[in-house]
Image (cartoon, rainbow, N blue to C red):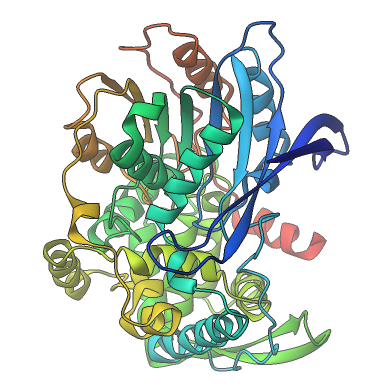
Length: 470
């Protein structure tokens, strides 16, 4: 393992001293191949003279590099606080960020079709095509794409612990990072001293179920109707969404966006699949949800300006390339059949259909991995004595609190704190950061509570002015 000085520059322009580490590991520990890959991490040295076991941050996605998350000032604040306990290790998981290869570095032809959002079938076909191109590109370079899965990822973390010379490590995982943490506890639990799991995603818990999206929309609708600034303007978001979906089903619209790859305007055909996808994404994001009522209201009377801005960002995100690591990780651990059948039943009655799991469609997974899947033992119930703090948000539709409770059943030395008004990302909140710090310091946090400010909503006029400024 090699360590070199590194300047971590956060998005506010501040430079923070750190170390950059690189470690070579086997790409596939279960084959005869001797191919090695490189995982990379940033180490923030502890500010105390006798640090405790290192804290390893496992970020979500899958595919979001920890080194990138650390550049966000509120996340750096968290990591800086944790230096009061131990060294903080920000791991770019295999296939991501500064690690090599980075499977997200796919060449893109910049030819995402103009009708990609015309129907769900067109959307899935375009995603499958782009995924297949990216997978083929890396396979043509000798990469075993099936090796970019959570079990191999967990073994990487164990090898990193050994390379650091640490008897044990502590884990801080968010979203997919919690699934990775659980896999590590399953296979190398003796190496884990403590764990904080925020926004818990268990094995096979990929995507958001239709019933959860429906309930989340009702919760947000109630909050919007009760907002003193916008309640009269948006009295019934549920009815607005249903109306907008039905209208786009009958009459898809055409919007003109700026295609970043070509630096030129193009026309896109937009049906209800785009609105469902956009709304599903907004429902678990505390900042984005503030614009949701205005989006639905504007569409109800034919104003496409807010939809155009959302579709432009969505199109250019996909047109710029596919997050292949996300596909290989999720597709290698598909939702167990019983849960999948339940989800399919829910989708038939849901306003969202199965949009919350669109990137897990069989045609997309086949392009990513072929027929590779992890064994059934990956999904077996997990028992662990590792002291664990589970964190959830009452407004988190991605990883609702009941997912954490299902996993927690096998963790007798655990606490579960549900953050009131918390969305999918609770770790940026100062009170949550204080809670995490106390837990890693060995303090009893059982019974603690955290309440965040209730979301506020932008009036239509303000939302439209924001679009003009952008």
